View (cartoon, rainbow, N blue to C red):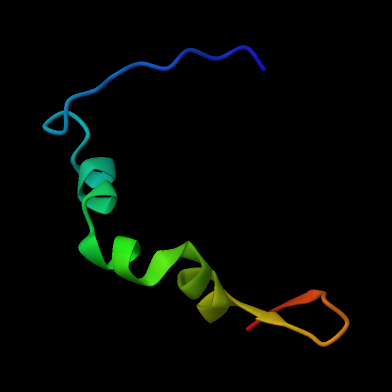
Length: 49
């Protein structure tokens, strides 16, 4: 992939800045958030809840 990472101050990108500062993401972890959307079936596949 040919891409470039560009820094943008939080004041210029408020939505992403707000999401990155959510404290509950650090406490719960991403795995807990995905479990709300996906259910693990016994054969190890995923099903949309």
